Image 1: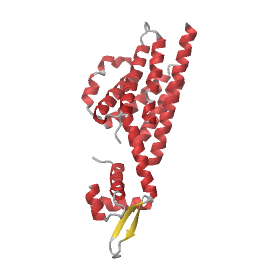
Image 2: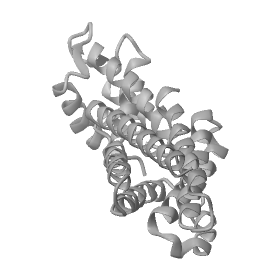
Image 3: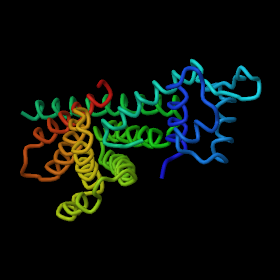
Length: 91
Length: 167
């Protein structure tokens, strides 16, 4: 079972790997998260300033891109994941 | 001779206190940054080990802080256990020596099992460190054994935890 933090990191990673942004359907597939759960999570991440929603060229589709705060969070996560693994614990 | 043992004892507890406090601070900082509850538990565990070292200098109460600290570390490892039954197999032999010894030993074995999967040098050092700390506490309970050896082993064990923070 993946913890919420692990899912958040998977979502942020998926979005960060696509600088042009990702649609919700693409995040569902790449991060392997059910749509209902992801929808709520994206709202939380946006409210926290880790991702931002932008309109597509056609003005109908929305894309999510990672913010500098989100990139910083991912770096911090990797840093402390390594620390935890050094201590023998898997985050 | 007694002065030398007392000096080694004081140095050992000072090193244990400093390293535990450092790992407490780093874990707590990590928790503040990424809000992972495992890091919060790690912080609490090492705060208790720091208190254990502080109180251990002048009273037996230090062992109680160590016991709870290593209990939390043991629970943390149980949550992400690699091969729990194997790690538990070696525990009964020294069961009577105290909860702190049991769980530091358990944490050491679990960490080494984790190392066998991850192959990270810091994990190897931590695993060995927990085992040395357990051994130091164990030999510290044997009256015939020179206590300075136990103190030196304790200091070496805590110093070996440092690579977890710096690598």
